[in-house]
Length: 125
Image (cartoon, rainbow, N blue to C red; front, side, top):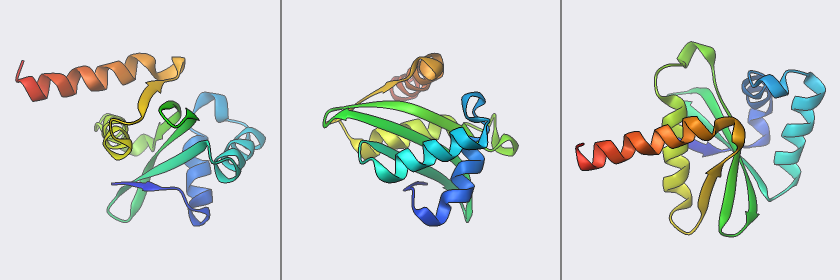
């Protein structure tokens, strides 16, 4: 289940963000989490599996109709289970058709595969 980030999840979110290669340094992760907390154009969401938070996905809204996925990370213990795909698809459902979601260059191939798989499921092809 996708939920919005709250300050009470700060340490968990920082831990998940630190799995992203560009976010390895504690100073970088701290700056990133501050951006999500202080700038309304940057929104962070967490993926809960029962009581556990196992993933994080962050977007940057360039305007009211366009968002870019800037960060996505899943706890290594839960990788290869489709959590990243579920986060992207849930984010798309949450924001609806009024907001166009694009991937950053880092996750472009992964993002496109998620929607290719969804299309196959919907059409049965």
